[in-house]
Length: 107
Image (cartoon, rainbow, N blue to C red; front, side, top):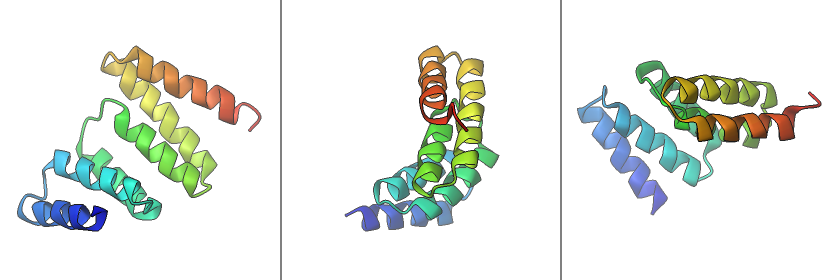
């Protein structure tokens, strides 16, 4: 089922390559399918095109953690905090800060 949704999002991007919401949807489906490397690429692509409010950075950080790319994950959480604060999402920023403190305090 996830594969068919992934293909649907890819087809939608072919007809509308600048649609950032479709790019976000594709990344989300790749994450749900545990296709972390592809999800990282899709999220980075989305983030170069969209003014994300923080959620995509958290998704990116989680995918990077699954790939054991912890330094990059930390950077994604930090950028997510900045984006969340910029867009008025203090609880998201706090969640990311708590994750950094809990999971990365000794790094």
